[in-house]
Image (tube, rainbow, N blue to C red; front, top):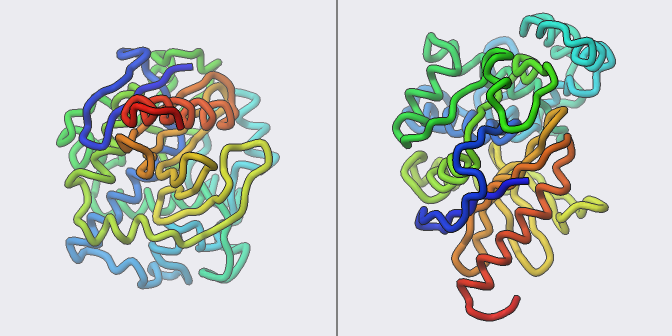
Length: 298
């Protein structure tokens, strides 16, 4: 396990493994959302207009309300990953999942969909006329001075702190950023408190659209989702804003705790494909910082 912590102002408070690299998994989604929101703020896109030839909008996709089926549970997908096959093309993935056969009418339900975020990636690449790796580098990573980058090949995952056991990052179809725990906290700090997003776009991102109850065995007393970002609550801690993620060999939670003293931002990475230990570790790290900031027990 490793943890990095910033305060709301961006001051580094803890960094267990400063040079170790980790896959950020679904913490990549807030970056995709930021890119979509930046384009909309420039007037390039209307978040609520149906995509060409499709019944859902960019906002539906960002909210996981488009009805696009999720690919993670597909038997054929699991079998191909387990067999260490090369990743399928995007076209085959969408065909395998039946992306045109929606689970529900857009806006009428909610289901977490990595497939939907692949479609957002495709829209961004068409808009910019280049690959997602370069878009992220130009629009987000380089301006923030981050060394993180999009993992593209098996050789990228060979550089990670924990062995990837041959897992190819191409199986994460919306893209998988990789970098240090500190860079993950810096990115979230810029997203929530910096100038990465215009104020109105940030407000839209943080509008909690989906609200759900607790998850047994997990830290959440309430779950929720905005535009590409998780918004939940935990007892004795309050709101948590960020994103968890997991793959076959590691998991994480990168999150801000805006109701605690010092408003800590925590990135917790753990070995193994379960977010639960990362969530509990992040909460405990945030509580420790808050206790120090407040000068009294929580």
